[in-house]
Image: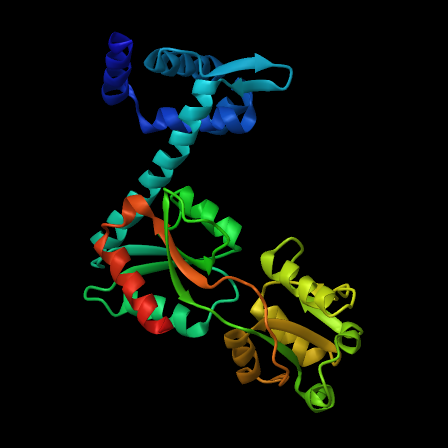
Length: 313
């Protein structure tokens, strides 16, 4: 075993190349030597030879043939997982060197959920752009699941999202803020809908704008209706897009939605929307900053987290 391990380690250090990892990922995508060859603009014999050389490096087959095409072996699956991270890190390094060559101080890739407090997003961007030299920023929007996946795939450096995850060995989580929900309706309907006590049955008859199905916020809103003894309404539109919600509130007189309070204020400030005065509660967890534990010694990343905590306090 030690001899095998030493030989494998020597092969990985002295012979493995990034372009070989790229070929493996093409084989995984296409499950075919010929289709992978076409994507890479190579002949099939060249790809066959390259795969044989790669498998010699790892001292074991990485794929086997099945009726469905090429399938990764157990070792192959482990190598492919590493290949995805290695190529993501290589792309990130290229982007980092490009911004340094342009005279900037580095690059931060931030993932954010759509329903994020504007002050926190402003703090993230302002912090990077106020540094000397300034730091380039990539902001990627998505659901918590999408962004945590991107974090683990080394596609973003920090995620600002509602955490539904127990703190793991690979991810660090720091709470930033918690917000209560707010009902938002078109301005011209606000006075009528504000009168009297909160009536979930009455509200359920309106044209609802809700987050997509199976999202935590959507499930929480459905629970709020169920707790009130009312069947959750079928939404008119399903979206996380604040721009789309704002447009609907301006143009659809019966539109209504529930969003975190900071987002509600943003919608109202944009015109055409108003907040209803009813006090609501939900059990959504706080918005948190998350990053990979392996990156916790990054000075720019830790400075960003400090700025986010200051903006949330």
